[in-house]
Length: 444
Image (tube, rainbow, N blue to C red; front, side, top):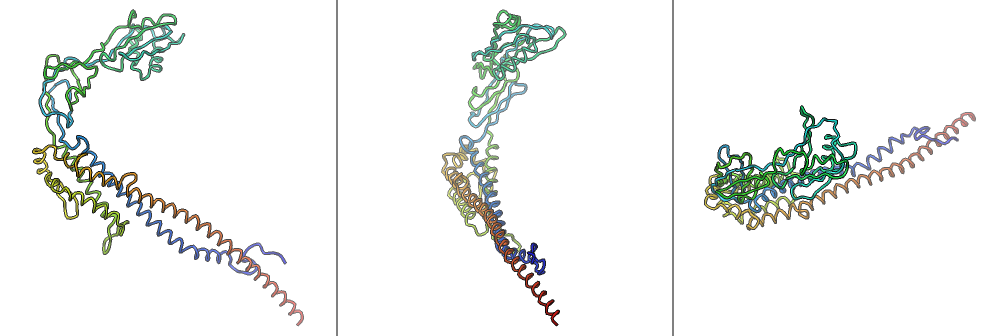
């Protein structure tokens, strides 16, 4: 008798459908469990991600009060057409100054004689020195000594070393212009030529034909009659906490520079802390909401972590309630903060260091809150630990699905072997039954 090679043929038994149904029924409980666990895990990962982000933003807002960030800012004002601009930090002393820009710092600029574009000036070696810096060489190869070749060699070989070469195409021919990247005497260019055919000597600063378009001139500025010379037009150390940028020289003409207190910037920074604090509380309340009638439960409903964080934050605020109230900071029933601007202005006018005393590096509340946040959002903090735990759970779910697929494959194979054998046996029985019936019919 021929062996059956397709399940169900001969017996009529629907082996494929039976096996598929049995495997699906076996798989469903595990699939349902993994789907529910995966959905919950993803929601919790997202929830803790939102909380971590909000707490990190709060930490960043608190960090703005470090060092002098907790002191009132300073606002600099200058006279009309003063020839300089100014900005001030909290380190600047309130006051008025008379500033005169006697001269601006300029970059050394040299120019060659005009020659035809195809003229080969020379080859060999050019040695440059910018101010008191280390000398460096630019090699001009034989046959590549036009001004364009020399420009390209300088810009390639001396890139970032303090000199830039350009060409201006004039009526009388091409002119090579060499400009120092540094202003003032510190950027003065010194050039010498050696080797080759000697033609490069025309580009030497001593004995050559270069002309000076702009001198390596230092800036000169006076503040209340005190003279300061600088290689730069950007001065950060002329007046403590004040930065001056010189834009135009007006010798002998003084202009006023005023430095005044600017508590508005500090108020904005404090309001930023309040906003970040309230956002962190709101995020945790949303993610841990219990839910109920007409209310959706949060992904972390029943999880003690958000409630513990909120409680510790509110306790830290409560421990410094008097200092907060003195600055115009108030707490609502739900723990959120608000800032009374008028009360803040009055407090800062009386005590400019009040915010630093509360939120600064060495302030008791500042240290306590920073320590608290570090325990939560630090690399080894609680939130990092929870996020890692959930990530591990997600990996475990993925592995469980892989294991389930393998187990179902083995189960399907086992079922198929059994039902194929049953199918074969039934086909054989049917064949035997048909054979017997035929012979019994002949006998009768």
